[in-house]
Image (cartoon, rainbow, N blue to C red; front, side, top):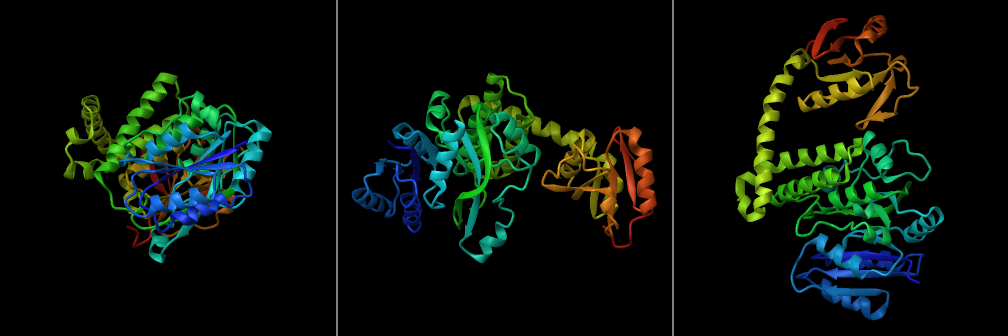
Length: 425
């Protein structure tokens, strides 16, 4: 019985492919198959794959006549798979020795559709280590040790700014993927975004385990490290359209859905300039997609005008280097998003009590005001909560001698508690 199918698209990774294959074939779980899709790799990868297949019958190789990109390879591998569970691995990465066994046992014990887990990172150079210092390996948020629906887990990930789309950090029941037609977009990049979005939203039984089974190789000339390219915009925009269509067809409107759509929209917006500088939409998009692109540009222009209007209340904050937000609810979330969109730096969230509040928001700490004994030079607090709480909070801040603004209905009142120090920008 084949318990797990490990699916590996392969293209131009000759120096790293043996380590990848060895990490799979040396797993403590022996009842697995390794399906390798040679995506017309121009280097020595085809020969390496054939050599491994000749000595280990668990290795199956499909050689493609022309390059189709990673999503196509994953889809063909899933169609070929015979294992009860499927795991997708990139051909320059690795997994820890007991990963497949431990994931299989947990999935069987809890009758899971899928499992999400963490990773390690292997930097090839010190320069890449510096450039990739923000690569999130292990999540630090609060997650229940329990079976959840995928939608509920996605909301938890997004609320704590820890949703990661890498399929290499996911382990899926193969029948679940097939029955729900969860496949990767083909002939585009950033396909992980859509695959993961579909899978987690359709799954009824998932878990998160805080274990770093996946080993990411952070190397030069990969999708993660190469310079921006028109294909980035093509991938982000086309997948944004697919996500929007998927949400509408399934009637989805959760926090996690909205945050994914917003993220993809922002990615597409950020790469549009690179695309416009050197690419013709007719060479990249279908006629229907080009019509969507016209509306996308119009929406961007509308948002630019709206942002210019919304930035007006924040003028007084330019005198300060950093901001702290007092509040962790709906008002604070809205203010945080508007401040960051206006390029202000928020360092943390302050609350009167941690009871009922998260440990972090948007990756920033949530701290009780009682634990804060001094205010950093050049910093100011923006009280972002219902106006009825302003007087109580102001009294606490005045007692501590802190500088602060009160925010309500798009208006800043203040500053109170003193002017910024000299030298604040």
